[in-house]
Amino acid sequence: MDARRAAFALLLAMPALGSCAEWKVGPGQSIAAAIRAAAPGDTVHVARGLYNEHLMIDKALTLLGTGNPTVSGQNSGDVVRITASDVTVQGLILRDSGIDIDARNAGVHVSPGADRVTVRDCVLAYTLFGVTLEKSQKVKILGNTITGKRDLLSAARGNGIQVYNSSDVEVNGNNISYARDGIYVDVSRRATFRNNKIHHVRYGTHYMNTDDSTWENNESYLNRGGLALMEVRRLVVRNNVAWGNQDHGIMLRTIQDSVIENNVVAANGRGFFIYDAEYNVLRNNVVINNRTGVHLSAGSSNNEVDGNDFIGNEEAVKFVASRDVQWGRKRGNYWSNYSGWDQGGDGAGDVPYEASDLVDRLNWQYPLVKLLLSSPSIQTLRFVARQFPVLRAPSVLDAHPRMRPNNPAWSLWNDKRVH
Image 1 (cartoon, helix red, strand yellow):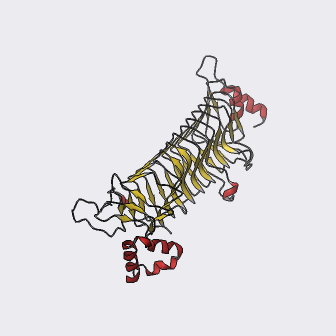
Image 2: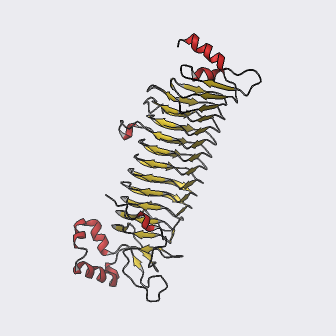
């Protein structure tokens, strides 16, 4: 259809004066032309079909797809760029952005100052960045499927969702894969991240300098790293699952005054990687079948660590410090490699659990020692080291470890095994 016929068809779709201001676009017509003709507050309905165009939304309106219409950027620029506040984009397949990483080519690019934008129930396929925003407030990214340019090397890809210098952002119910990082957040405030699934990326999240936020009910799996939460205060990290990640399940780096509870970290290289973390509460987490349950270093001491289950980890704790750290002050943790006893029958061990003794240190320095762990000589060395403090290494200590797991559902994750 030539330009004149397309324009005539668009005129037929125009609302009459005084109507509800709904514009209808079908195959062969131009979505961009409908957006230009619409007034603030209007809705542009897009019917199922393929539309090869770039969309600029510079006024408050709703762009609503019916039957999952596809808008292709034909591998250049942004598919949709939003420069106005109070815009909703819903129910479309947005695909084939450009690959200019400096320009952050995206499926949906929200420009600085565009507030209260909602991107809902869209498929963003083969885009460099899925959704990117900067200097925006109260943006909602809800229920989208985001798949990056998986044929590019990881470093050449953009992020699934990128949030920079923004506040009160809500990211909920998205499925993100084959990006560089699933969710990248920096220099922002008061964000919430719930019910997202992130897989086959570098980091499930690369999250920095964003305080007073919530990570809840997210699943990060089969990535290089799971959740990387860095340089933050006052986070709530609750009910997340991180499994099968090569490096770590949940990284807590330079984090303070935060609550990390009821998470499952299973079959990762390291379950928790805790570095320079103080004045946090870690409770009721299940740390199961990781190569290292917890890697603890850089002065991560003044934390409350209670009621967690450490089960089946090849190495329960890798501890790098010059003095002991006390865990389980309020409620003991469960350690599947605990060899003590409970004569009183109160469910708590009578002998303190010591996570890192001389034998553990030898294992770190000389991995072949693991071949001898079941031998009487190694068991004797472990016993002697505990009797003579001069041989003792600093360790995580749990005065009254639990004899049974605190979380009765721990076995649901027992089939996840680190490779």
